[in-house]
Image (tube, rainbow, N blue to C red; front, side, top):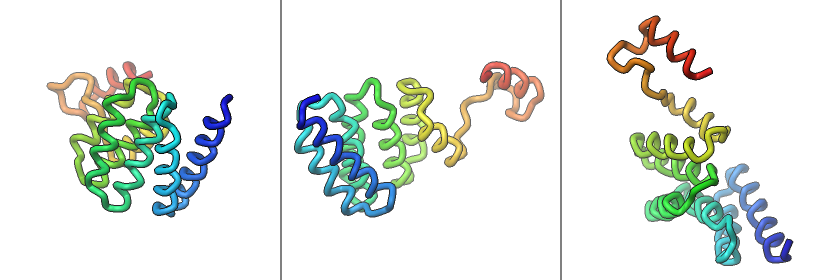
Length: 148
């Protein structure tokens, strides 16, 4: 593994640590460094999405566009969609949050962050038989059957 990739990964992990601990300013500093060093890296969209999300948390509304651009260019990494969904949620864009989660689950249906976030925002997919009420016993039975 080339030395620059190892270096970028170390910086990224450090940024994630600061993001998880709530030190958004330091996280943003490290994510910005990662972006500058990862121009040709295959994980660039992931790095860009974390940078954009950290900036959103700092109140930068334009950073939402950074997250959206990263997701438009992503095809396999669920973290990119997860970060965009959380960024949309910060600005109370519920419909966009739900749309991004649905798109992200197509890319990575086992992504635990997106699954947990869906539960957190109380997002439920359409009922199995849409013309019946959600709590109809037939709907519940078919829905449970389809989801197992």
